[in-house]
Length: 364
Image 1 (cartoon, rainbow, N blue to C red):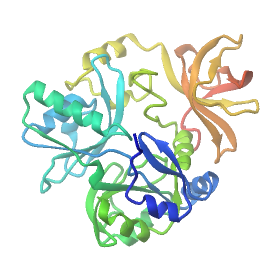
Image 2 (cartoon, rainbow, N blue to C red; image 1 turned 90 degrees about the horizontal axis):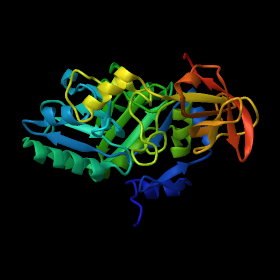
Image 3 (cartoon, rainbow, N blue to C red; image 1 turned 90 degrees about the vertical axis):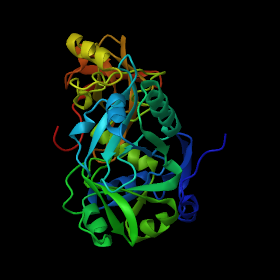
Image 4 (spheres, rainbow, N blue to C red; image 1 turned 180 degrees about the vertical axis):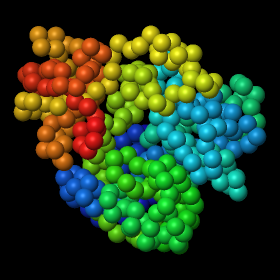
């Protein structure tokens, strides 16, 4: 099966980007260097094409009820223009995907927009449609992923950069607030959200107008490589890598995103998660810093002081900000406290490491 391409694939190719397959998409992994792109976001501003993210619109009289029953957070708490981070779980409370849910202004055709991860849009469209029909709800579910492009502008200068290109005021948006605004003459959904730990916006616009908006936001173009190192420094989960319903099934409490679970609402997996919260978890998602030289990668074993395997690395890199090897993974709860001594097996050799708080940078 051929890979899907973002609307600006040719523009990125002309700029000299290198590409990689991710979630069924061919996306830019690097424009100049991961180090330069990472530094730009931490110190100035960078722009990412994240058009591989899915977009599902939900409308109709029972749209709120459908969203409430299929996500773990409380959508009834959202006013128009608000958003929230949520999990999508199965009956056992296992995370299928994580998502951001937006409540759209009342004047729009749809009431909600939610954003599944790359390659999950068709799966989530089917899940929403199947449950709607099973429950007899009156709601329309539309997969509009290919109708839109999505960019993320992130970094200390991002707010000023987007603000200067926008007709309406967006600088006063709070975190997880959004509104429609004209960016370079293009009507965009502008949200104060992101995946880097820096301030900034994510912008959604018609695919046909993507180049106009991209060209108007003059800053360092960034690929998925820098997006990955940035999110790892913050300890953010990556769907399909830090959790996977088939290869690495995890509940929100294991993944340390229990704050997204509102047990006073009714959703698929609620009863299972109530039991998990009452009983506690055996393993937790943690940060890891290597003491010895080496880089931990996905799938590497985490060991105790005696060399016994106790867990597994799910993500790892050399932190461009710290210039230290960092990793994320799961260990038994008794090993999950910061500064606990562990080991990581790197290419057959045991390396000394310590459990670390996340985020790795800034306050933790």
